[in-house]
Image (cartoon, rainbow, N blue to C red; front, side, top):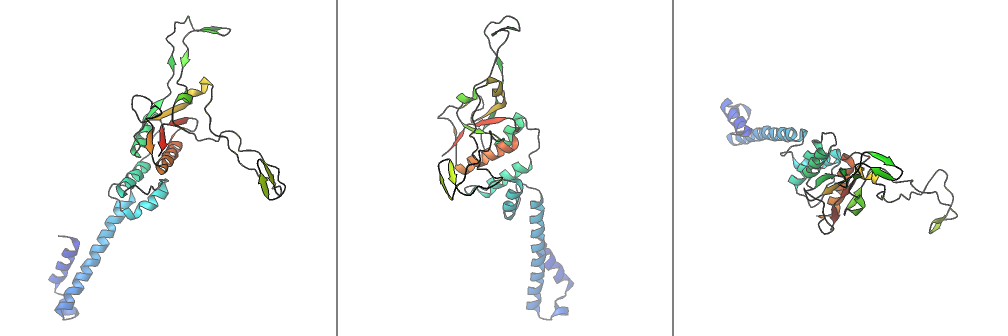
Length: 255
């Protein structure tokens, strides 16, 4: 028995019908209406209860607000349960940014990718001691994967180089790098440099990889296929969750 039926039965037992109107038909309709209002309040209570903390039973009317709160991009093709899963994933983020935690968050967001750290290895070439004489090193040589050889897209947090020069203005038209217009004081025309991986092996350890394979990196024809919206959202959460100093090569592409 639901709450509406319980309220209606209680009112009938009190026999208030004759005291109010003396009209049995109208009295019954009144009791049903009152009981329905209690039922509506009870349903609203359940809606509020299920929406206070993101959970699998949260009301779909709250999804837009929670996506804005947690910075989750709403992807049109996603169903309500998929949107709820992403909200729960964003609300549950609590960790130290390590590779295992980062991989868990990315997979919770719906992307089957694995974190591969660019771990240094020691060369197996015979060495003699740990000393260096001039340009010859006697000892174990440290090797990293050259990230420039790995297929994928670069995801980084920090600006790469200067934002760009301030152009000379003489008028309202622009031709190439020269803009003809009134000079605007204290302004600049941003021309950010594209992210480019360094050729210095000492920096390669700060680059990690997101591969669709658990045990290896993907080749050029094995990249994870995503929509433009999904790829933009993936890059967004990677930038948000990774350490700022680290760069990522995401082995995915938009189709």
